[in-house]
Length: 204
Image (cartoon, rainbow, N blue to C red; front, side):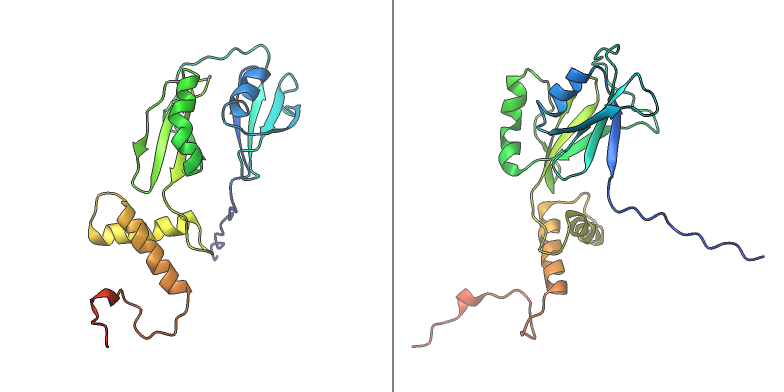
């Protein structure tokens, strides 16, 4: 008997992430009041009526949702990082906002990691009021039109491995962008390699 052909359950993006929160106001004050995510929807937790279910828009139309219960207090102890647990959540910032992040966290007395150099992006880490590690990340590049950040990083990864470099650096990203543009855009030139036009002697 022939084995059935396995097929994937193809994902098309993150639908939502749900967290267990404490009281309702703590969630609103953090997700909207610190991270600027509009509070867009609320209803009971349909699996546990004693809880409420709050929905926040992280900026791309996807959702961060939080189960809240007025009998739960905020516990700032670091959430578990055992296998199978969430290590951290990362949210995208513009470079303009990212450059203000240290100052704005300091204004609230929130302890943070300071800016971390990740080669292709900058990151800052801190904990939410319940001890969940939050990363605020800002890419150092914009992908070419028609491509995603993930596609650029995939190409940059291939370049890094081929060159036997330890981690992705800006040069890998820049070269990846050049490759993707050459691959996806036509040209009338037979030779599209880099040139040095400034060395030519001007004809008089």
